[in-house]
Image 1: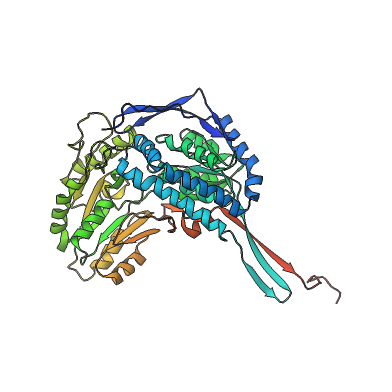
Image 2: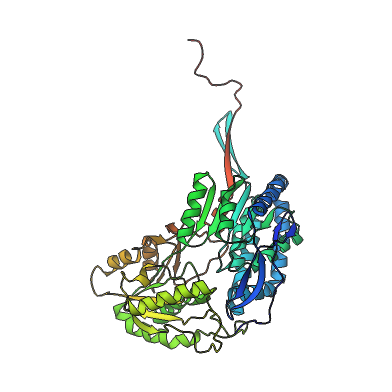
Length: 503
């Protein structure tokens, strides 16, 4: 099922352009087999402060480097990432359990796209300010300055992609970063740091510290940290944002969701099923933007369920390095226990109708080891069930039927779709593009798809509404999150306007 013979060297911390090992370590595991992959050096307060100090020392030179020159360095890193895509993807598969068919085509590729986008953007005027002629003899001009030393805290589900989503605009804008990967999936971090160094990023500009939440707490509370960019669950994000706000730090928060996937009555059944499957089973359901609440009209329900069941054979668990495998295990033991509890609750307490899957592991998985769960479908779900209210972050699809025979069905549907404290993503499937635009405009989410699900290109700014986040990542607007603006008014009239003159 996985790579039981793989063993990596101890992963050090990386700051000031050098490796730093520690005696205090923890292990990372191959989720497909539950076997150890590597010992990871755990940062303490002293090493976190040293990493921040190295970034602070590097900042004056890096921030003064012309954007075009920073761009050339970052584009060298882009070339190295693309050349080593498959090697990096294998590491990602070992560490996350995601199939190589996914990591080799999505994880490194999409992260590298963002780095390339920002390298080009800053080289072509993306950091330019504005000028305004206020009067014939007075001008206003604005400039954009980097923030300083920034903290990036990654999530375990898309480690390489998230590391690049954070570091790309950060470094392109002239900032330095201390990055803490998730303790569950740390193997990518040193690889990225060494690629940056090989490309010519100066020592101290990108640094790596390892550890769990306590290390993140030391990092984000440090007075020399100007900004915190965090990706993770809502509860943790609220704590991080609260601590950062108390010190007036800039923040970007990309948090969780309980997103609606809205199937309108005129949608093609095949498209609706394909969209719902992508919104729930891709990456074994471990995607923050998953559309786990699938609203299906009663008039389509039978056909939708039948076609969905027919297509579940296309969800193929197995050896994660096999190119035909497209469904892997969950990332960790603790997460496996969490998702299993939700499935059990859906069956026993919510009493939702189990249409497919349930407790246990996929039949194709022969090994008793690893953190495998069945792709699971519940139907006849209601809005008050625990499985439809809370983020499961696993391959659990909940079908919520709605009565499309009533005159007010659309108003009721939109109200139900928006009835969540989170607002990360949403999607609409329809054959009427007018309906698609109108419904999308009324759904309370920061990321929207119409007749597709999940694509998040570098050009697209993404961020959550409500409890799902603060700020945006990617796109032109994403660069603004890594700079501070200065406005200057210049008076050229030769005199100073004053309220204090003789009568």
